[in-house]
Picture 1 (tube, rainbow, N blue to C red):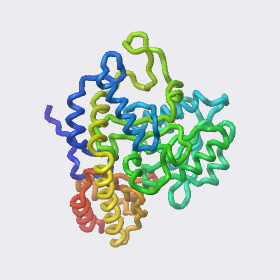
Picture 2 (picture 1 turned 90 degrees about the horizontal axis):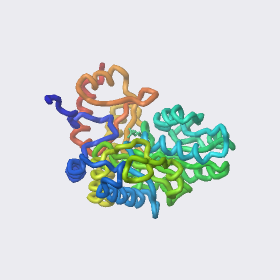
Picture 3 (picture 1 turned 60 degrees about the horizontal axis):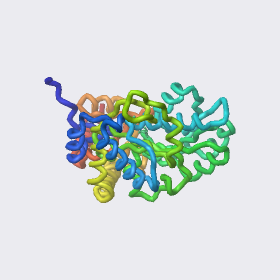
Picture 4 (picture 1 turned 30 degrees about the horizontal axis):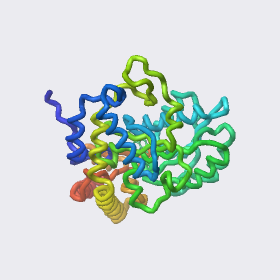
Length: 352
Ligand code: PLP
């Protein structure tokens, strides 16, 4: 096969990154294993237990339950599914700020629940008054985002927890991207800080594991049991995951990355990425582009559409927010040198 994979040296839009070398090596070793069949593949199954222990440690959850998903989408779908299974109403709804990831639209369609989007405030966080006005006895799940896809914002998770409890709904935190950064900030986002029931937290994003390695954490095993089905032809007897056969490579690489990097390596990376984001926001502002203050390592800025297209034509992999701002994610592979080269191109092409 002649096709080369995408090089990372111009990728500024992705929420995935180059796997850490130990994660890459572990992925290769476990390529031919299937944690979906733990009776037949016990080694990868016990590694998955380790992955969940580690994720629990990162997210402030002692005695965690959950599994390594194919990504944030699967974790979010499963969280909606758990909430729907537990709901006592015939017409369950999911309430989510409009900054929530589009995977919840897939979940709502698949599961036949009504997704109610509420506005965000001027700083792109869930507007609590709007959420309060929306929740009612039909609310099965309230979603808070800890590290939004477009602006890297963290919703007021403890307050959302109180609102969820006031209507007997569950609280799901989508920390798919933010979960490996937030432990090094003073945000209240995790199981320790709020009555969180379920969480998406993905090793294959800021966790530097190989794709596919997402994470679903649940506060107690009984929540996961809501999803279990019998599995007659396997050596094991039940399965709570959405997919059947799963990637042992993803699981092994997640454990290897977390063993290697939690917490000191992730802290260092987070500091580096945040400094890069602040540098970039400063460089854009100095050139007259309106940039959103990066609270986590993600920069959004108003750049004319023609300039955006010219940068893309120059080979930069960049993306836009729903309202058209340039969006750059300072993932581990994004170095200061890359950003300097990007800004130099912006200076050259910006007059378009
Ligand atoms: N949740 C958030 C906050 C995300 O940013 C993303 C993807 O970027 C997802 C969920 C979906 O994750 P995946 O693409 O791994 O399914």
